[in-house]
Length: 109
Length: 119
Image (cartoon, rainbow over all chains, first blue to last red; front, side, top):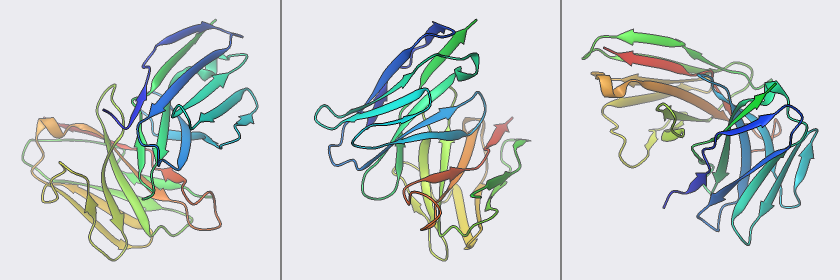
């Protein structure tokens, strides 16, 4: 079983829609959680860290469910510029990031 | 702050040659850097952890004699792909671990990546 799994999508949504997707992790000892955004042929860029209490940054909301071992990302009022691949990443206790394969989101006009 | 650069951004080479990729932290010191590889439509896979002044730690399945890592200073780590073959063609990305006080200590700052094509 992979350490981090994501629904690859693609999620095709119209502008202004809300889109949400999850990422599951296999190791219950995982300590830190992140969402990254990766554009085609570019490096990943940190979108937000995910805290136990959940956190929001503008139109983006991330939540952590430790009991079910998943994190979620919700994007409200989607913009064309939100089209990208969203990677979740998890750290155990050795500072190494384990990435999911990414969820592709395409926002159409 | 926390900018990481990589050089070159892309390289095309013949099979059997060696390619060196540089990863630099431009405005902070990085005692720990990481090297990843990403094949099309796949996840970033950690290849090795590079520690300044000591030997790199390689992930299972990564050949240390093929992927030579040197972290000779607090701002530079290099990855050399020796005797490259077409199956080594990939997107190689480095990252540097955030120093204490600059960001969440678990955060990593990524370089822009190097696209390697081996003919």
